[in-house]
Length: 144
Image (cartoon, rainbow, N blue to C red):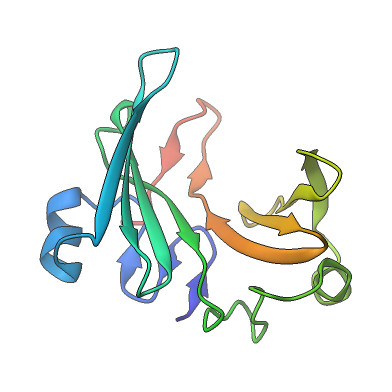
């Protein structure tokens, strides 16, 4: 699986409609929906056998807003980040920075120029989340 920053993975593109992704991938293995305090609804389609989760938000007309990758087969610039030690990733991608320390053992790192988030548990990358580019109006700039 090839990670394409600001675009998606393989032939799955950020900004795609749920209908287009359903036609491409078939039904998700499971799904969930959450409502946030601001009234925004987020829907997640889980494909654990394929190693990713697709998220759709009501405030972006339910277009694909993030992709969370859990498979060790995912490749970003010849790096397989899932399962990698964070210090090794820092050597390979020196632009990543600590974004949030969620607990003593859980941290979120981000690569600002590519909008990629790396969730790290006990110094090991557990998952990678892709985001689209955002414009000055704080709205996504879809690649498709």
